[in-house]
Amino acid sequence: MIWIVFVLVFWIAAWWVNIILTAQKPNRLNAFAVPALFGITLLLLWEGIVRGFGISPVLLPPPSAIAVTFSQNLPILWEDFFQTFVKGALSGYIIGCGAAFLVAVAVDRSPFLQRGLLPVGNFVAALPIIGLAPIMVMWFGFDWQSKAAVVVAMVFFPVLVNTVQGLQASDAMQRDLMRTYAASYPQALMKLRLPAAMPFIFNGLKIATTLALIGAIVAEFFGSPIKGMGFRISTEVGRLALDMVWAEIAVAAIAGSAFYGLVALLEKGVTFWHPSQRG
Amino acid sequence: MNDTVISAKNLSLTFETNDGPVHALKDINLDIAKGEFVSFIGPSGCGKTTFLRCMADLETPTGGEITVNGVTPREARSSRAYGYVFQAAGLYPWRTIGGNIRLPLEIMGYSKEDQAKRVQQVLELVELDGFDRKFPWQLSGGMQQRASIARALAFDADILLMDEPFGALDEIVRDHLNEQLLALWARTEKTIGFVTHSIPEAVYLSTKIVVMSPRPGRIADVIGSPLPKERPLDIRDSPEFIEIAHRVRDGLREGHADG
Image 1 (cartoon, helix red, strand yellow):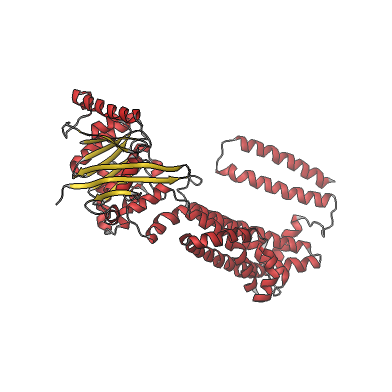
Image 2: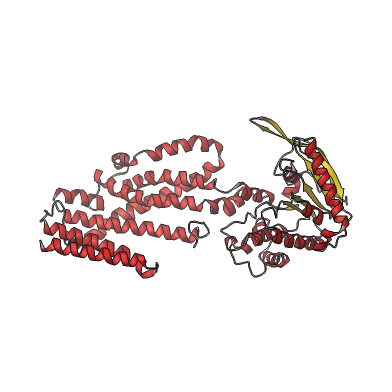
């Protein structure tokens, strides 16, 4: 009971502090403090409710238990992270996005591909590609290659569709200007169409970060070597070791956010000129 | 060398639209000599912009003939015979002002030193020196338009085609830029084609005013200006100026009456 009273008091206190903080002028400190306080409150609420109501750790382990498991299993978590994120997701992401970019440039140049491939692309982009995972495992084996293949298939079409759209984003006057300079196709591509496409391309790249991680983890449910985040999640659920499952989820959350943040940071650097990034 | 820079003979352009053909230009005949400042004035839809775009090979005429520097507009474009200034500045936002002016020079393969020298030169010409590291969106509309003019001047083209370059600017900025443009024209001796819908602007700037009328777009009157080359802003109050302005207005009105 004491736990529940404690978290309720903390909750109200934190709420009150956040109201004061958000009423202030935005600055560096409260830009960080408000979400941090919110997150800490959420974790404490979780901890207090699990302990106060005596919820079984199989249903929901308290954050403290997850943190302990996390710190005790760092080597395993690192190995899983390396297998799934670096080998599976990241290599698939690079291959998939790179291929999509090259195909987009080719599609842009050829009206035939534009009319033929794009509708198919939009259709395939709407499919739950993750259903292909078992097939990919059959084709490319249990190791990371099949996971990378799933990731390639998942990220390819969103990046393709966004890039093609971006390459058409320059306005008529900007293109006329290139024409008055008698610019060649590669010149117009490098100096106008690609820079103008960057906001769209990064939109696709950001969507693809999340897709890549989902693809790499879920693909491991259909067969993998005895390491990897997806493998660990599915086997530890079987052993009712939910704290380990949550520890893997924490790793996935951290890796996913960091990955997205990195691409967003890159976007800020490249598309600093776009109205959405200025200021 | 032939003195005629741009020559149009029975030039016509018809756009095919869903509502039937639109005669943007019909039987246009005009010669522009080297060093002239020619304004095209008329109500919207009279084809003045279309005519300018035909000279620049941005539109293809459907009838008649047009030559630029004695060759087809396409060949003239390929040999980079003209600089073009659009209605909006159209600077690339990812490039600095200096970078935007350098753009045509990069494309045309000027050397790095030459690029830097020319950017500095034209920035001084349009009174923007010191702004080369700023981005377009950090500048006012008038400054952006000046940068776009500098961009069209950076490479060696003898012809400058300007499509309502000051249309979106306020009166005071416009007066100032008109003055600067005249000074620039005197210094560079370029041939200028200038589209506008302002009578005072056309009269103040031009050696020749082409009055156009709509539906179909055609030339209603061609008025040679007797004004001297040296033109202070207050020349606009002189009787000669007012008389030419009257003639332009009459030409515009006639075009409307039978249009």
